[in-house]
Image 1: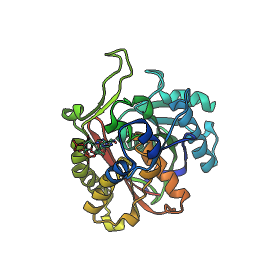
Image 2 (image 1 turned 180 degrees about the vertical axis):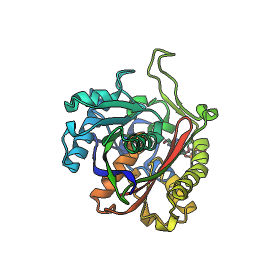
Image 3 (image 1 turned 45 degrees about the vertical axis):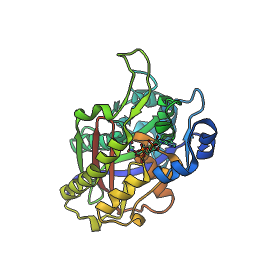
Image 4 (image 1 turned 90 degrees about the vertical axis):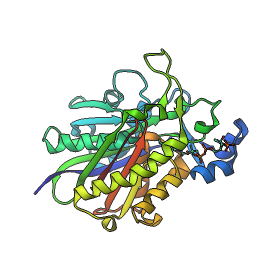
Length: 318
Ligand code: UT7
C-alpha cells in the first residue's frame, strides 16, 4: 500500500463585506456588463479595515479542523500559501499557529502567487510521504484588495479577499494526492507583479498585462493538468471535477474545453468570489463540497497559474 496525503477536512472563510459590480460602477469607469462578459465575476468579498490575512487564514483553518474533528495540537505542520502576508516576517503560517494556540510542530509560508495553493499542496504531500509530518494544515489566504490601485480599472474589478483550508492526513489506500506537476518561468516576471516590497519601501500595487497572462493561461493550464493526470495514470474521462483557480470564467471554460470535459464537471465560484489568488482553489473545494458537488472518492484535478509566471496542477482522489 502507498502512503498518501488524504483530505480529512476542508473549510473556508469569506469577509462579511460583499461588493457588487454595481458598487464598482459607482466608483470607477466600468460597467457590470463589461465585468460579467469579460470575466464572469458578479461580486467579491473585501476585508474590513484592520482585518488581516492572518485573521482570514485562522478562521478558515478552524473551519477545516472542525470538519476534520481535530484540535490544533493534532497538526504537525501548517503551510500558508499567500502573496499578501501581513508583515514581511514572521510568516503568516507562524502567526496562524500562534492564533490557533498550537504549541508544537512547525509552520511556513509558500509564495507562488495564484498558483500558491498548488505549490503548498505539493509541499504537504512531500512532507507526508517522507514521514516528516502526519497531519498538515494547508491554507490559501489572501487580501489582494490591499494591492489594488483604484486608478487602474483593468485590475481593481478582478480581485477579492478570502481564505480556504484543507487538513491532510497520512493514510494508506487509494484516496489522497495522486500526482502533481509544477512549473515557473521567470522570463515572464513583468506580465504580473507588484511594484513594491523591500526594494521600494512601499507595499506597492498589482500590475498586470491581462491579455498576455490570459494567453499563457489558456495554453499552459490544460497542458499541466494533462501531465498531472498522466503521472497519476488517469485519463480526462476518469475525472469527476476540475477545481480550477478562479481568475476568469473564459479561462476556466477554455481549459475545460481543451481537456475535453463539460462545464458540468467544473466547480465554478468566480462569480461570487472574484480572483482570490492562492485562496481560490481551497475556497472552491470547500464550496464545492458544501454544495454537494464533491464527494468521497471523486477524482479532482486542480490547476492554477499566476505571477512569476508560476503554474501547475495537482490530482487527488477526495
Ligand atoms: O490570477 C492570476 C492570473 N490572472 C489572470 O488569469 C487574468 C488574465 N486576464 C484576463 O482575465 C483578461 O485579460 C482581463 C479580464 C484582465 C481583460 O480582458 P480582455 O478581454 O483581455 O480585455 P482587454 O484588456 O483587451 O481590454 C479590452 C478593453 C480595453 O479598451 P479598448 O482599448 O479596447 O478601448 C480596456 O481599456 O476593455 C477596457 N477595459 C475596461 N472597460 C471597462 C479594461 N478594463 C475595463 C473595465 N471596465 N474594468
